[in-house]
Length: 265
Image (cartoon, rainbow, N blue to C red; front, side, top):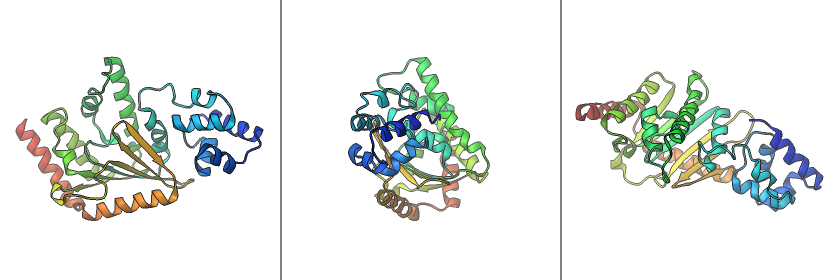
Protein backbone atom coordinates (compact mmCIF):
# COMPACT_ATOMS: atom_id res chain seq x y z
CA UNK A 1 0.00 0.00 0.00
CA UNK A 2 1.45 3.39 -0.97
CA UNK A 3 2.02 5.81 1.88
CA UNK A 4 1.13 8.90 -0.17
CA UNK A 5 -2.17 9.13 1.69
CA UNK A 6 -0.51 9.01 5.12
CA UNK A 7 2.12 11.59 4.14
CA UNK A 8 -0.60 13.95 2.89
CA UNK A 9 -2.65 13.49 6.07
CA UNK A 10 0.40 14.31 8.21
CA UNK A 11 1.12 17.42 6.12
CA UNK A 12 -2.47 18.66 6.53
CA UNK A 13 -2.38 18.00 10.27
CA UNK A 14 0.88 19.88 10.72
CA UNK A 15 -0.37 22.74 8.50
CA UNK A 16 -3.34 23.03 10.84
CA UNK A 17 -0.97 23.21 13.80
CA UNK A 18 -2.33 20.04 15.38
CA UNK A 19 -0.54 17.24 17.18
CA UNK A 20 -1.71 13.66 16.60
CA UNK A 21 -3.41 13.76 20.01
CA UNK A 22 -5.23 17.00 19.21
CA UNK A 23 -6.43 15.63 15.88
CA UNK A 24 -7.53 12.40 17.53
CA UNK A 25 -9.57 14.39 20.05
CA UNK A 26 -11.30 16.37 17.31
CA UNK A 27 -11.87 13.39 15.01
CA UNK A 28 -12.98 11.06 17.85
CA UNK A 29 -10.25 8.54 17.01
CA UNK A 30 -7.35 7.12 18.99
CA UNK A 31 -3.95 8.75 18.59
CA UNK A 32 -2.39 5.38 17.77
CA UNK A 33 -4.87 4.86 14.92
CA UNK A 34 -3.93 8.21 13.38
CA UNK A 35 -0.25 7.35 13.82
CA UNK A 36 -0.73 4.07 11.94
CA UNK A 37 -2.62 5.81 9.10
CA UNK A 38 0.11 8.43 8.72
CA UNK A 39 2.76 5.70 8.67
CA UNK A 40 0.86 3.78 5.98
CA UNK A 41 0.22 0.79 8.23
CA UNK A 42 -3.55 1.12 8.23
CA UNK A 43 -6.29 2.22 5.87
CA UNK A 44 -8.94 4.49 7.42
CA UNK A 45 -12.54 3.41 7.25
CA UNK A 46 -14.97 5.60 5.33
CA UNK A 47 -16.23 7.02 8.64
CA UNK A 48 -12.65 7.67 9.84
CA UNK A 49 -11.90 9.60 6.65
CA UNK A 50 -15.10 11.64 6.99
CA UNK A 51 -14.23 12.65 10.56
CA UNK A 52 -10.66 13.54 9.57
CA UNK A 53 -11.94 15.72 6.73
CA UNK A 54 -14.25 17.53 9.15
CA UNK A 55 -11.53 18.02 11.75
CA UNK A 56 -9.02 19.33 9.20
CA UNK A 57 -11.47 21.27 7.02
CA UNK A 58 -10.35 19.39 3.90
CA UNK A 59 -13.81 18.96 2.36
CA UNK A 60 -14.11 15.39 1.15
CA UNK A 61 -10.50 14.90 0.02
CA UNK A 62 -9.54 12.24 2.57
CA UNK A 63 -12.77 10.39 1.88
CA UNK A 64 -12.49 10.57 -1.90
CA UNK A 65 -8.88 9.43 -2.08
CA UNK A 66 -8.99 6.89 0.72
CA UNK A 67 -6.90 3.82 -0.27
CA UNK A 68 -9.19 1.10 -1.51
CA UNK A 69 -12.15 3.46 -1.76
CA UNK A 70 -12.63 2.50 -5.41
CA UNK A 71 -12.20 -1.24 -4.78
CA UNK A 72 -15.59 -2.92 -4.58
CA UNK A 73 -14.13 -6.43 -4.51
CA UNK A 74 -14.29 -6.34 -0.70
CA UNK A 75 -16.77 -4.72 1.65
CA UNK A 76 -15.78 -1.16 2.58
CA UNK A 77 -15.54 -2.00 6.26
CA UNK A 78 -13.18 -4.93 5.56
CA UNK A 79 -10.60 -3.11 3.42
CA UNK A 80 -8.34 -2.07 6.35
CA UNK A 81 -8.39 -5.63 7.73
CA UNK A 82 -7.31 -7.07 4.38
CA UNK A 83 -4.17 -4.90 4.47
CA UNK A 84 -3.45 -5.80 8.10
CA UNK A 85 -3.65 -9.54 7.36
CA UNK A 86 -0.63 -9.15 5.11
CA UNK A 87 1.41 -7.58 7.93
CA UNK A 88 0.39 -9.82 10.85
CA UNK A 89 2.81 -12.23 12.48
CA UNK A 90 0.02 -14.09 14.27
CA UNK A 91 -3.69 -14.43 13.46
CA UNK A 92 -6.40 -16.09 15.49
CA UNK A 93 -9.80 -16.55 13.88
CA UNK A 94 -13.17 -17.52 15.26
CA UNK A 95 -16.03 -18.34 12.90
CA UNK A 96 -19.61 -18.89 14.11
CA UNK A 97 -21.34 -19.61 10.79
CA UNK A 98 -19.02 -19.61 7.75
CA UNK A 99 -15.48 -20.76 6.99
CA UNK A 100 -13.03 -17.84 7.48
CA UNK A 101 -12.10 -16.11 4.23
CA UNK A 102 -8.40 -17.06 4.23
CA UNK A 103 -9.36 -20.75 4.39
CA UNK A 104 -12.13 -20.82 1.77
CA UNK A 105 -11.82 -22.93 -1.36
CA UNK A 106 -12.81 -21.39 -4.68
CA UNK A 107 -16.07 -23.36 -4.86
CA UNK A 108 -17.06 -22.45 -1.30
CA UNK A 109 -16.16 -18.78 -1.79
CA UNK A 110 -18.10 -18.61 -5.06
CA UNK A 111 -21.17 -20.02 -3.35
CA UNK A 112 -20.95 -17.53 -0.47
CA UNK A 113 -20.24 -14.50 -2.66
CA UNK A 114 -22.81 -15.56 -5.24
CA UNK A 115 -25.60 -15.10 -2.71
CA UNK A 116 -25.01 -11.37 -2.27
CA UNK A 117 -27.78 -8.79 -2.36
CA UNK A 118 -28.06 -6.94 -4.59
CA UNK A 119 -26.82 -9.80 -6.81
CA UNK A 120 -23.33 -9.55 -8.29
CA UNK A 121 -22.81 -9.83 -12.02
CA UNK A 122 -20.71 -12.83 -13.13
CA UNK A 123 -17.72 -10.51 -13.63
CA UNK A 124 -18.15 -8.93 -10.20
CA UNK A 125 -18.46 -12.35 -8.59
CA UNK A 126 -15.30 -13.54 -10.35
CA UNK A 127 -13.42 -10.48 -9.15
CA UNK A 128 -14.60 -10.95 -5.57
CA UNK A 129 -13.63 -14.63 -5.60
CA UNK A 130 -10.13 -13.85 -6.93
CA UNK A 131 -9.69 -11.19 -4.24
CA UNK A 132 -10.72 -13.62 -1.53
CA UNK A 133 -8.42 -16.37 -2.78
CA UNK A 134 -5.50 -13.92 -2.89
CA UNK A 135 -5.91 -13.45 0.85
CA UNK A 136 -5.03 -17.11 1.33
CA UNK A 137 -1.57 -16.50 -0.16
CA UNK A 138 -0.34 -15.56 3.32
CA UNK A 139 -0.48 -19.29 4.08
CA UNK A 140 2.11 -20.02 1.38
CA UNK A 141 4.79 -18.84 3.81
CA UNK A 142 5.47 -22.01 5.83
CA UNK A 143 5.93 -20.28 9.18
CA UNK A 144 4.40 -16.80 9.26
CA UNK A 145 1.85 -15.71 10.16
CA UNK A 146 1.06 -18.25 12.85
CA UNK A 147 -2.64 -19.04 12.32
CA UNK A 148 -5.06 -20.53 14.84
CA UNK A 149 -8.63 -21.18 13.75
CA UNK A 150 -11.58 -21.89 16.03
CA UNK A 151 -14.73 -23.09 14.29
CA UNK A 152 -18.15 -23.41 15.82
CA UNK A 153 -19.44 -26.85 14.86
CA UNK A 154 -22.34 -25.08 13.11
CA UNK A 155 -19.83 -23.94 10.45
CA UNK A 156 -19.18 -27.58 9.56
CA UNK A 157 -22.81 -28.67 9.72
CA UNK A 158 -24.14 -25.95 7.41
CA UNK A 159 -24.01 -27.47 3.86
CA UNK A 160 -22.93 -24.37 1.96
CA UNK A 161 -23.04 -25.26 -1.73
CA UNK A 162 -23.95 -28.89 -1.07
CA UNK A 163 -22.19 -32.03 0.10
CA UNK A 164 -19.38 -32.13 -2.48
CA UNK A 165 -18.32 -28.52 -1.91
CA UNK A 166 -18.39 -28.97 1.87
CA UNK A 167 -16.32 -32.17 1.71
CA UNK A 168 -13.70 -30.41 -0.43
CA UNK A 169 -13.70 -27.40 1.89
CA UNK A 170 -13.28 -29.44 5.06
CA UNK A 171 -10.57 -31.58 3.44
CA UNK A 172 -8.70 -28.35 2.64
CA UNK A 173 -8.74 -27.39 6.33
CA UNK A 174 -7.69 -30.93 7.31
CA UNK A 175 -4.71 -30.71 4.96
CA UNK A 176 -3.56 -27.37 6.37
CA UNK A 177 -3.99 -28.67 9.92
CA UNK A 178 -2.20 -31.98 9.39
CA UNK A 179 0.71 -30.17 7.71
CA UNK A 180 0.87 -27.98 10.84
CA UNK A 181 0.42 -24.81 8.79
CA UNK A 182 -2.61 -23.90 10.89
CA UNK A 183 -4.00 -25.09 14.20
CA UNK A 184 -7.73 -25.87 14.20
CA UNK A 185 -10.13 -26.31 17.10
CA UNK A 186 -13.85 -27.07 16.95
CA UNK A 187 -16.36 -25.83 19.51
CA UNK A 188 -19.01 -28.58 19.80
CA UNK A 189 -22.67 -27.66 19.50
CA UNK A 190 -23.38 -29.50 22.74
CA UNK A 191 -21.41 -26.84 24.61
CA UNK A 192 -24.31 -24.44 24.14
CA UNK A 193 -23.45 -20.80 24.80
CA UNK A 194 -19.88 -19.54 24.72
CA UNK A 195 -18.29 -16.04 24.82
CA UNK A 196 -17.85 -15.66 21.06
CA UNK A 197 -21.23 -16.88 19.89
CA UNK A 198 -22.43 -13.39 18.93
CA UNK A 199 -20.21 -12.98 15.88
CA UNK A 200 -16.98 -13.47 13.95
CA UNK A 201 -13.71 -12.40 15.57
CA UNK A 202 -10.16 -11.99 14.26
CA UNK A 203 -7.20 -11.20 16.51
CA UNK A 204 -3.90 -10.05 14.98
CA UNK A 205 -0.41 -9.43 16.34
CA UNK A 206 2.44 -7.54 14.63
CA UNK A 207 6.18 -6.98 14.96
CA UNK A 208 6.04 -3.21 14.93
CA UNK A 209 2.63 -2.16 16.24
CA UNK A 210 0.13 -3.07 18.96
CA UNK A 211 -2.28 -5.99 18.47
CA UNK A 212 -5.74 -5.31 17.04
CA UNK A 213 -9.06 -7.10 16.91
CA UNK A 214 -11.75 -7.17 14.23
CA UNK A 215 -15.34 -8.20 14.85
CA UNK A 216 -18.03 -8.63 12.21
CA UNK A 217 -21.79 -9.01 11.99
CA UNK A 218 -24.36 -8.67 9.20
CA UNK A 219 -23.06 -5.98 6.79
CA UNK A 220 -20.98 -4.37 9.51
CA UNK A 221 -17.44 -4.79 10.74
CA UNK A 222 -15.42 -2.97 13.35
CA UNK A 223 -11.67 -2.66 13.82
CA UNK A 224 -10.68 -2.37 17.49
CA UNK A 225 -7.34 -0.85 18.50
CA UNK A 226 -8.19 0.34 22.01
CA UNK A 227 -5.85 -1.70 24.25
CA UNK A 228 -8.58 -2.38 26.83
CA UNK A 229 -11.05 -3.60 24.20
CA UNK A 230 -8.46 -5.75 22.42
CA UNK A 231 -7.41 -7.30 25.73
CA UNK A 232 -11.05 -8.08 26.60
CA UNK A 233 -11.63 -9.74 23.21
CA UNK A 234 -8.42 -11.74 23.58
CA UNK A 235 -9.78 -12.92 26.92
CA UNK A 236 -13.07 -13.97 25.32
CA UNK A 237 -11.15 -15.95 22.70
CA UNK A 238 -9.02 -17.68 25.33
CA UNK A 239 -12.09 -18.57 27.38
CA UNK A 240 -13.89 -20.05 24.35
CA UNK A 241 -10.75 -21.92 23.31
CA UNK A 242 -10.59 -23.56 26.72
CA UNK A 243 -13.96 -25.21 25.98
CA UNK A 244 -13.11 -26.25 22.41
CA UNK A 245 -12.10 -29.76 21.38
CA UNK A 246 -8.39 -30.60 21.46
CA UNK A 247 -6.44 -30.50 18.21
CA UNK A 248 -6.59 -34.30 17.93
CA UNK A 249 -10.33 -34.48 18.60
CA UNK A 250 -10.98 -31.52 16.29
CA UNK A 251 -9.18 -33.30 13.44
CA UNK A 252 -11.26 -36.41 14.11
CA UNK A 253 -14.45 -34.31 14.00
CA UNK A 254 -13.36 -32.68 10.73
CA UNK A 255 -12.64 -36.07 9.14
CA UNK A 256 -15.92 -37.57 10.33
CA UNK A 257 -17.87 -34.60 8.99
CA UNK A 258 -16.10 -34.73 5.62
CA UNK A 259 -16.80 -38.45 5.36
CA UNK A 260 -20.45 -37.81 6.17
CA UNK A 261 -20.71 -35.31 3.33
CA UNK A 262 -18.99 -37.69 0.90
CA UNK A 263 -21.23 -40.58 1.89
CA UNK A 264 -24.26 -38.34 1.53
CA UNK A 265 -23.06 -37.05 -1.82
